Image (cartoon, rainbow, N blue to C red; front, top):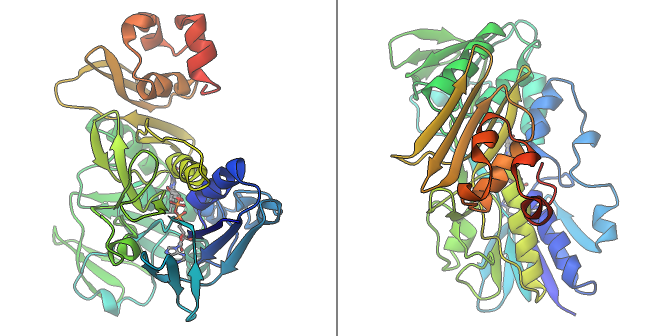
Length: 412
Ligand SMILES: Cc1cc2nc3c(=O)[nH]c(=O)nc-3n(C[C@H](O)[C@H](O)[C@H](O)COP(=O)(O)OP(=O)(O)OC[C@H]3O[C@@H](n4cnc5c(N)ncnc54)[C@H](O)[C@@H]3O)c2cc1C
């Protein structure tokens, strides 16, 4: 009987468990979970703050998930090291765990740059976990003034979650626009206007230079007084455990399309890895839930002796703030052609290179965006579809019957 061990208990780990069980019903699966919760849907922590969900409904899988899959989860335990030669991992409770196949699914951790006086701030929080959301919930009152550092996805989701529970929310970012890693200036401006209309205040192109208790001095000289500080500057992949074992690591753990690391029988999946983005033909960390699941599943199948590849990864996001939705996928390489459609309430930007769709940004658009995503993922030559029609509206009628049957596979 094969012994499978998974470090981490997030989305990638859930995918890995399901991948293993799709190929091996017998082997033992042990999951080492630093957090004390069954796998949950991390993006829902802001909905928890908004009171749109509760802890139970945040579960990513049914209550019987681990029992159904004969997986033994060890909660509240950290893996501290991998001995790749002995094929065992070390635990922070002093224990050791042998494995035949190991998957590292350690996700990422908040990145907090050095900021002068940060230690003088009492009420400061990251926003990554259920425990962060619970702590933040305890700290705020209806009179609180909240300063959020970081206008990326996590910072803005936190702002939306706290909206209505506090008196004032200010978000600052060194970047000159919101969601700077996924939106360009025009799309970001529309999103910012919408957030401002909902009472969120922005200080962009500047960030906190120093703190003194509950006061921040910004780089532009402005002073912002606050009661609660949220640090949402960015995240870093948790790679140390593989690096210390001699594994190859860049910004994330390096894996191939089968999710193998360079250590024998050690796989890795999810936010802790970096891998090939086919839309930009570059290797990067893509900290995204669907990719984490698909990578985890791929790793699981391969650990159990099957053959699976995750070889069509692209960055993609589907998020909304105060009812305005935003979908992005792929990349916008230099020199690509752009098709644009825009009015006061929506923007559509499609990016085409070498006769293929390589990226899009849609604000206010909702329908069938999976068709665009599938065109990017499948590297479909646009000569094979009715792109003149698809540009205007993603619709199945613009695709051949064969494409619909064999390629889309429920993507829309
Ligand atoms: C507020 C917020 C909003 C988000 N919104 C979106 C969104 O809209 N769309 C989207 O695609 N993605 C979103 N994400 C990102 C998404 O949540 C992640 O991509 C996804 O959770 C990654 O899954 P993972 O399993 O790789 O890592 P994680 O879910 O981070 O799980 C890793 C787990 O491993 C544990 N761990 C780490 N080291 C060890 C160790 N040594 N021993 C034991 N356990 C360990 C960690 O504690 C953690 O529980 C959001 C994230 C946040 C925080």
